[in-house]
Structure formats: structure tokens, C-alpha cells
Image (cartoon, rainbow, N blue to C red):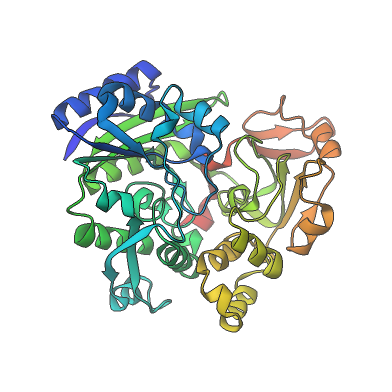
Length: 427
């Protein structure tokens, strides 16, 4: 059922608009006594989910007893991040999700179904796992809050992914990422109907039906002026609410370029991107737009690690981003990598498969990744001071720019908010 919807390619929702829409939906839901909010973590700051969570607390007061950021494999939020994202919401409500230990398995999606939707590329059952708090907390409303945007693992982010991955367990997260990787991320990004989404939908229909989940979905993008704009707010409890948000997201978050791009320059905001686990969105979201033999320049001043999880970080360092055949051979040979298929999927996603070059420009602080570390995983390294002199991000505009020496580049300031493709690679 749809409780509220407001969105179009021309819509520009203010904070007051979001509050009005959310409260209209909550009024329609009727009286509730114990509420859990499941927003994303700080890595999804532009989603407006932090503000919507704060509005939820203002609406329900003490009836909002718990807030469980959908960390997935990410590190827990810091006090600063909580304050910045959730405003005046009491920090005492925040719960940390432990994806390796604190989960309940609700059931399995059978192997034969996964084999069918993946076109025979994988052959294993998939466990529907969520944080125990969802099933043991006694809630009569679970608000899953987040942003629908093109995504490398599932096609379009959010909806039941926020629950089944964001609060999911290691086996479920690892296997879902691997399904998407071996099926082919370029076959899925920007699409609402994908093998991974079908697995999530199967699990939702079978195993989440008794949980009182209502989805609060935003659509946020970067407009022609280079400013973040909220194009839509959708609230509902079934696939229809996601489908409507996904259609709008494809309209406003997807850029079809007229020709393959020879050089793409991506800025990774230091408040959001500290790892290649997150920073490789610069690779995922641009890969279908970059020409064969092209260049991807990644300006990453806060880059300090590869994985947000220590085990995954170590596996990335061990195997690097050297393409699909290399990674699949490693999966076959190493039981630890087989037990961390999410890491294997990430290694596949982060490689250009030799089609274009990827150069990371990390900061020069003591915590930043070094040239040796960057090059050891298969990326090229560049000097960030020299890069910022040439690519002055304070003066670049979104999209095509011509530098003083005549070189043409394509600039992206927020890779997580979009998907770029050349028509021949998207169809």
C-alpha cells in the first residue's frame, strides 16, 4: 500500500516538504506503540534519511525506542557522524549492527530458484538474515528509511535491500554480492528487476511478511547546477512503492552520455569516502561510460583503507583488483575467500577488466594509503597535490569541462548519486 508519494523530475523537496509528507504517511498508519527506525549509515548522508529519522523521533517521541543504522559491512558510526546525520535525535537510541554475529536466519531461498534467476551462474541456497532486534524487539512498526539510486550489487538500491543486507548477516551479504558479481554488474545497474532483487523479493514474501515494515524512500540527485536536489519521497509497505521510486531514480540519477568518455575525474568527498570499499563507486557508476583505453582519475583525499571490515581489507590486499578470472581462481583456491564472497564480488566490481586505467590520488597524511599500497592492488597511484592543481574541483562543473590546455574531461562530484553510461554499453 502507498501511504504517500510526491516526486517528479521537476520536484525539489525542502525539509518542510519532507516533514509534511512523512507526517501525512505516519498519520495514515495510525497509532503505534513501539517503533524501530532503520536508516542508512553516514556513507549515505545525501539520502536525507538522517533528517527523516530525526523527524520520526519528533513525531513519535518515546515510542521510537531504537534506531538501527543499516551498516551492512560498514564500521559503526562515530559520535560526530551521529550528531551530524541525526541532529537532535538522542544518541541513546542508536544501536550498532554486528553483521558477523548479531543476526537471525529466518529461512532460505532455495538453490534451484537462485540457479534459475542467475541463469545457472551460481548454485547455492541463500539465507534470509536480519538483525535479531527486528524479530525480537516486539515492534509494531519498523520504518526502513533510505534512498533509491542505481546500485552495483542489486541494480537499484534500497527497499528490502536495506533490511536484508543493511541489517543482514555475513552469509547473506556475501552470497548476494557474489550473485550480482558473477551475473554481471553492467547487466544490472540502473534496473529494478535483477536476479539479486528477485532473491530479496522471494525472501520478503516468504520470511518478512510478519514484520511490520514500512519503507520511506527518497530520490536524490545532482541537478544541472551541481547542487543536490531531492526529487521524490515515497512511503509504502510493498514492492509498488519501490517500483515508483526506482522509475523516478532512473529518470533523474541516470546520465546517458553521447559518446564514450576518454577521461573521467571523480571527487570523493572526504566526509563520506575513506575506503576503496566505498570509493570504488567511482569505478562502478562510471564504467559503462568510459571508453576502451580511457582513464578514470579518482581524487580521494581521505582514503586510508581498502575494506571497512578488517578481514575484507586483508583479502583485498592479498588478491587485489585484477579482474574476474583472477578472482574466480582465487575463490576456487582459497577457502577463506569462499567464506567471504562479498569480498570476492567487490574485487570483481572494482576491476576495469583491463579495459581502462584507474588511478587513485589519496591524501598525504600518515593514515592515508601509500603509493606502494595503491599499486599493490592493481590501481595506479598519482600525486594529489599535482592533480588538484590541474583539476581544481572548486571550478569544475558537472559533466564536460575543457581545461586551459584544451584537454576535455568529464567531472563527477558525487558518484554515489548517479549512474553514467554510453548507450551501446547499457542496452
